[in-house]
Length: 345
Image (tube, rainbow, N blue to C red):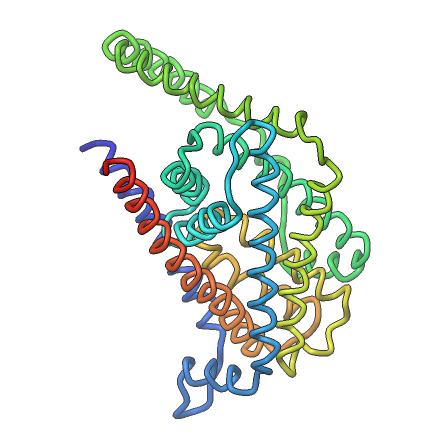
C-alpha cells in the first residue's frame, strides 16, 4: 500500500506540474472580446499549410523507423534477431506510454519486444539505455552548436529571464549545520534498522538489480561488438536530421514563423529538445512554456501566436504518436496472442 501511495503521489505531482505549466502558457494568450482561447488556436490552425503539416508527420514516422532499425542493429551482435515491424511497433508503444507515464516508455518498449520474440527484457533495456546515452550526446552537441551560432541572441534571451545569484546565500549558518548533522545521524540510524529488518527483501532486490546490471553490460557491449559502427552513426545522425526537419517544416506551415532562418529554426528545435527531455508526459507543459519563450524573446514572435503555434505543433506530434502507437499496441497484442495460440496448439 505504501508503494502504491508513493506512486500515486509521484504522478499526482507530475500531473499538477503539467497542468500548471499548460495553464501558465495558455493564460498568456490575449483574445478579443467574445473570442475564446480555443477559438484563437483553432483560427491559427485554419491558416496553417496542411500539406506541410502532413509532410512533417511523415518525416516523424520516418525518424521512428530509422530508430527502430538502429535498435535492430544494436541487438544483432547480441544474437537476438528481430524484425523491423517488431522493433518499430515496440518503439511506438514506448512513445505512446511516455505520454501517460514519464520515462515509462523505455521499459514498455523492451517488454513488448519480449512478448513478440522473447528477447530478454534486461538485454533489450540495456540497449535502450545505450540509445538514450547516444541521444543525449547528440542533443548536447546541438545545444553547443546552436549556442555558438546564435550566441548574441541567446545571451539576450538569458538576460531577459532576470536571473540573479547571491553567493552569500551559499554560506550556511550554525543552526543549519546542526540541523543537517542531526538529520544525517537520524537517517543513518533508521536505514541501519531497516536493513536489519528487511534483509531478505533487500537480498531479493539485489538479485534483480544484478540481473538488470548484467543486461546493461550486455547492452553496452553491443556498441563494442557492432560490425557496422559507421551505419549506427549514420542512423543516429539521420534520426536527429529528421527531428530537425520535422520542426522546420512545421515552422514553414505558419505565416508567423515561415520567415525564420534555417539557423533560427535550429535554436528553437534545441529549446524544444530540452523541453522534451524534462520528465513530464510527452514534454507537455515544459514544451508549452519554453518554446513560446524562445519564439518571443529570440525572434519577436507575438506571444499569443507563439503559444498557439506551440500548442498546435505539440498537439500534432502527439496525435501522430497516439494513432501509430495505439495501432502498434493493438497489432502487437494480436501477434502475441497468436504466438501463444500456435505454441499451445
